[in-house]
Image (cartoon, rainbow, N blue to C red; front, top):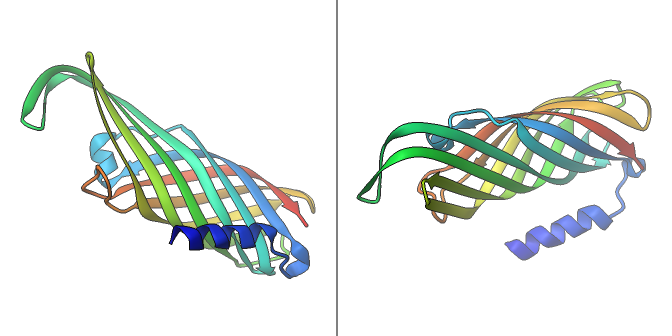
Length: 198
């Protein structure tokens, strides 16, 4: 599976497709809201995130490529007694979560060629999640690489033939794996700059 994913990524990057070889490279600021099990661990929104998207157009209305990024979550919990693995400790907790996705992604553009071009997309791949809980001198860490997917909806607005801005809402969902008995998920708002190349 890993070899197929790497091979597909190389073909996308090195391949020469139609649609005049046009591509989109997008760098976005990402604001994220934890959902599901992650929301039970950290309920605070994250204002520390970045996303990178690359799409090569294989048709004027279809782009395929890669998505990656980094979202980090943090929350300070009040002084209380916490029980983990039949052990109880009293004190404040500081909770952290770092999420690194890597997806093979495809987008469908609804109005190719227009200045305002809405789209829907789906990414499939893997996500690495790492949690840490600090309490006094103790630290508990959990991590996992898991199969994941990321549906998204958004739009590009072209400022000129070479650049634009983007807004997208993405839902990142990593299946239960490794140290996590439940799926790890979050919803993100991504606002970015798009470079349109050939």
